[in-house]
Image 1 (cartoon, rainbow, N blue to C red):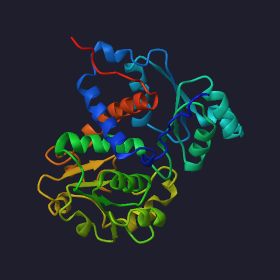
Image 2: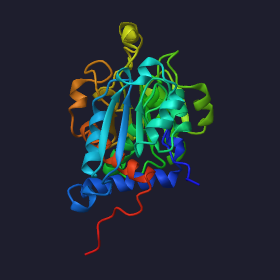
Image 3: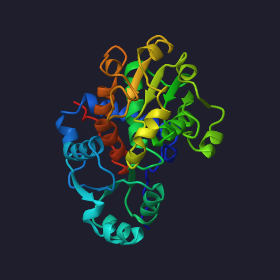
Length: 312
């Protein structure tokens, strides 16, 4: 009987040790990216990538990652497939997973990814949904550990919308044992269920200054996500006091980092000066680490037993 595949639909599909193993492997892959051995570990493997939402970093990092590990990737826009004509997700999952080795989906509804995974015979990765963005968190965790070491016992400040990124940070706080201070306008909080689940780790306030004070990491995202373009002007007014700048960062702990999952809207959620300040902002390293973290994730889910360098 075939073993049921592992999926990454949220960070909570991993335990702490698994998460830290993936991050450690991502660092190994980053350092050794040009070694011949790593260029063939996924020879013959195929990744199917479904995009209901547009993408830059997610598509490039997954597609390049598969190529660099010896595999290949298929780009499938929902509107160009039978999904766009109403084929049931469960039917598509059964058929597609019989033809490929792993699937990544970037869509609006988390329930669509969950249903696909339920009927898939291969691992399924959430490349982003309206509720969660676990792949970005893998890269963010990798980046913080690269520059500052463990997140355990630290404080992270989330400034802005209680969106999919914020909710994945809540999951990360539960797994890695750090405090998460969330500052958002009234009505834009993350899920109450999630807040209650992590109430010993998460604090929600209306004050960016209170959230940032003493934080080891300050992070944010756009105020209007994909699918919310018609709300942009209203949201900009409601989030006018939630811009991250050097003044806000001055309240954080000494050596605090700034992150943003990108794309950034300069002088909306973050000032251009802070985004480009290499002494504080690690957004470009964070973006690159999507590639390495996702390589490590795919190797984990595909249960590649040994991809370390051969002993000499």
